Image (cartoon, rainbow over all chains, first blue to last red; front, side, top):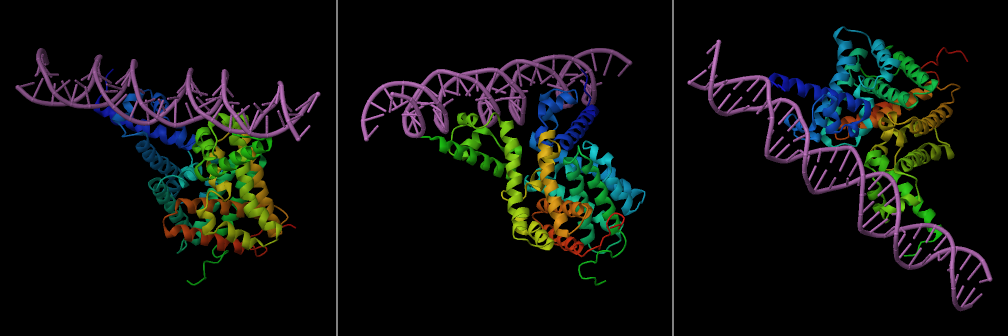
Length: 197
Length: 197
DNA sequence: TGTACATCAGTGAACGCGCGTTCACTGATGTAC
DNA sequence: TGTACATCAGTGAACGCGCGTTCACTGATGTAC
């Protein structure tokens, strides 16, 4: 054997990362302690040296799943500042639709989280707020109304396109919503609430 | 005891309805054969006189869950013809958000179905096509682009509002998306693909 | 209409299985001297 | 630097539990005469 204290932190990290990926790909219920530990080459008993319970792990893995998705789309996009159109095209790309395991966790998990406990909903809610805030900044708006609309359409379209996966309708869905959202980018195509500025 | 042949069909119907409701409220994984049968006052052994397996039941209950949601929103709305604005306002109402058990099955189950087998995805896909077709007719459009956009935003907004459930942001989400979608109803606010007609 | 029998909807004990969790244990890592 | 001991990351057998499914059974329903 041979397990240093430094290695423990790496183990915890591998467990958490693997759980986050599995959750995005196959949902919360697909994660079992035994199979998860096996997939990072450890045995089930060791799990409880890292997490208090499966439930504890799932909450932390949800946070991680959301953070990874945000890092790869929103924040990365914002770091090298790109425009709203690129953000939308990236989010509604075939690549994103086809890579549940690495993509945004919101469409992948929204149904599950919507019926989960208040803590899980709060975790996802804070990331949704982040997405809305990003969209608002990219749109240059002062309120969230257009940003909320955009995020709704993006999350809805990506989730729907994954159900329509096998037909050309899936591509049409991504394409249609992408085009129309980008048209939103032109200032005041749709008026704000009362168009008082 | 006393179980006539006519009662058998009623039992099957009660099992299927209860399963559809439970699925919309708590997801596929929440349905167990034993608890399901208990909730319709039968014992678990009798289940297999009605369905070949739990998997078989779940496929049929998905169809039922989707059909009930459609009946209560789209088709009912279309029977006594109402306009797009009423359809949207009804779909994005607080009442709909707060009644997962009786509401549209698409936002309630989309994440689960997006990672399910091809058969389940095909079942939901056909209902999504139905929603798109309804929206297209209500919008008076000749192609599906605006309808796809509208359905994406509606499904996305309802699902998101359920995650944001506890805050006033949930209401704002429904309100914002509702208002902006209804603005779409004005012909050619957003141009179709290439505005050739 | 009444009797004898077949059918079959629903019952509940039993099964094998995978699950989350516990715990006595192992042996390399880390530390005190 | 070397020795003796403590720590503790990871192991794997064992647990109780709920699950899906099977099956011998029960007794009212349905039917043939």
